[in-house]
Length: 622
Image (cartoon, rainbow, N blue to C red; front, top):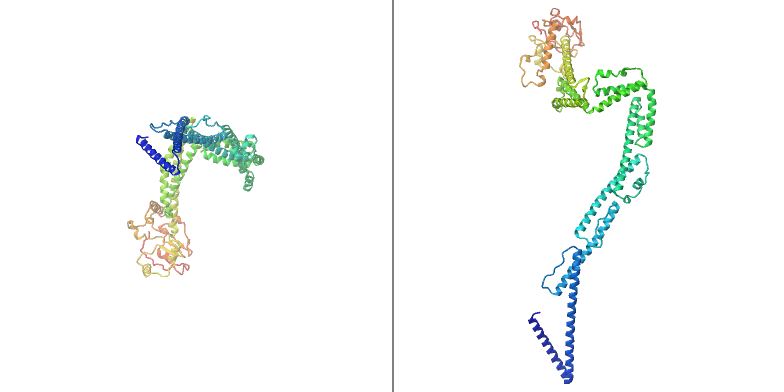
């Protein structure tokens, strides 16, 4: 307290004391208190004032003492809490009063005590969680010394530890649930009940009661592997038995209804199903002995298919002499079984390489099919949806891929021959020779087809020269052309014109017969324009056919210009009186007038021709 404040306090107290004494004097005067009594009373007043001040001083001194004691106590508590909480102790600033120091220390101690309480409470909760998870996983809890306050780092480490344990528990629990379901399904599939106490604990007890320890999880894994292996063994056995049974069924030609009924009644891998399949196999084996011939013939068919898959040559197939043996015995059947197993094993051992050869063979066959389609003249009539374009793209794609596949097969065969130190034969020869054989066979086939086509065209040309060609007009259009309701005058004039050469066709009985010698079309001498439709432009095949027809005609008639010799056409469109048509000559021909005279209404009442043109005696028909 400053000196000024102290003087002011004294003045205030003096003024208050003087005012009080004046009032007491006035009261005493009014009452009539004597001086003696006034002195006594004044002494009592001063005594009370003195005692009051002393009490006040004592109280303040006691307050000071308490504050100092609190400062000491709080200081000690603060040091202890700072050590327990692993924090720096509080350092009060210099020059503060005892009261402020006590307040600061009390506040800090309260905060640190709350922090300690919260940490201990959190530690207790985390320990309970840790203990629960550790009990399930059968692991050791996280270690924190007893009687100490954990630091924030320790609490965070404990939280991370618990989180990792929870994650591991969830993982193990998921594995346990899935494995439990699989084990239950396997036991049911095997028609087996839990035998050991561990299996009973897994299947029968509650899921939460199972301890997810490392030992239990390892035992659970081993149990699952053992049961899975048993299931796989049972499945392999059933598959093997079914394969044997199906093979017997195919050989015995068992009806499909009987097969389906047996399959429906014997599904799964239970012991009773396996026993039922074995019984059925035994029954079929008895029937097999009674039907050896049928079995041998079935194996021979299957053996031929496997030989084709393995590209066996004719010589190698003939090495199995039992294939043509007709003495059907058990020994013969066993020989066929051994040969079939041998070929199957050869295919399985070289499946990758044989599949490559088959791929080349398929592409080769596709290429030949495309070449055959390209040589078909009628393919342009079915070009719907751009089929020809797609076909050409596919053909080019195969032509591009075939050499690559061929090279891949050659490389694979070379590698195989290096590993096995022997040759890999396809059809009894090396793959390169096999390809050359295929090309040579293809070339011979094309030459044979070309020769057959030439012979067929020559025959058609010869028949057309003798009997006349068939009309190319569709039936509906031909019917319209043959029976017109009205004939235009221009056409009538052309038909009645005797100065022009008659038409090359004659209508008899609704059938169009070409004249023995028709005039060439007017456009024969013209050059084909670019506007001519593609289907009417001359192609290589049409030109070959034309040349072939001319050559055939020259071979048939020599240097003559007519081939008809004393030929009579019937009303029904037939030909009568052909005398040795293969030896027709120009000396045996008749004039067109004689030929047209035979087509009159009187001589041919069934003739439907509307107009018969008059012949031109000077015309020459080629």
